Image (cartoon, rainbow, N blue to C red):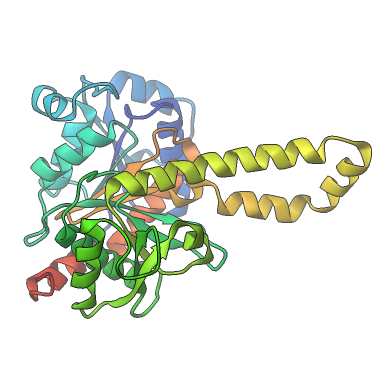
Amino acid sequence: MSKVRIAVDCMGGDNAPTEIVKGCVEALKTGDDTLVLVGKSGIINSELSKYKYDKERIEIVDAPEVIENDEIPTNAIRRKKNSSMVLGLNLVKEGKANAFISAGNTGALLAGATVIVGRIKGVERPCLATLIPTEKGPSLLMDVGANTDCKPNYIVQFAKMGSVYFENVMGVKNPKVGIVNIGVEEEKGNLMTREAHKLLNETDLNFIGNAEARDLLTHVADVLVCDGFVGNIILKFGEGMATTLFRMVKNSLMSSFIAKIGAVLCLKPIKALVKTMDYSEVGGAPFLGLTSLVVKAHGASNAKAIVGAVNQCRSFIEKDIVNKIQKKFKLGLDK
């Protein structure tokens, strides 16, 4: 396999460009790929001047425009042709990069990826998929925000793409699939989830039925499917709960001298737990269903998260996930 080229939007996200560029430099230490940094070249070069790195493995594509988070997605993609996001997506479309990472405007990235990069034939809606921590290892949750309103057949397609991803990236043969719902009984849920349940029962997937929200962190299924409205709420509630819980634990452990002694004794397992709940360890959420890899990094991504996103791209490309999803749908298994 030829060396991987990964394009990175250096202007998108709350901590751009400082943390994005820093993350790219750090990512060079763990692979032999080339990173294409897209954004305002003067600013990128200024940030790069802070570090020592292999200059042959970083390229810069100048992008004078930036799509901001408060812009209307479709308008921004159409009007800002020279933005870091649009130019980065075009690098993937033209085969000049194997993947594109952005922590910028999610709606604009989805709109741009769908229009510029394009969907796999047979896929009706690309979706955002992210790994969430559970007590028995990660589960793949999808959709987490790309499609707030879904038809039952979209959910089935999410499940099939997620199964390909989980089997090949996580190494789990015939992964278990569940629908996030308000009860485990087949008749529970709204019209969309009930119809999706019926359709999934007719597939060759390892479908286990409905999964209640209270069971998601017990690893009730390897792949958890839902519409983007529900998935995004789950994701953001989980992030907020983890942050608040750790803050409460920290305050409790610092409340007295005896508690501080106990904190020292349990510091190592607490750090290990914090690591499992840290979004920056995951890196980002791939858009499954596109003809090339596009990854949405967290809006608050720091350098560590960018390193994680680059590593995620390497694994995705190495496992040839796009082609494997294409083969799944080409065989007619999406019907």
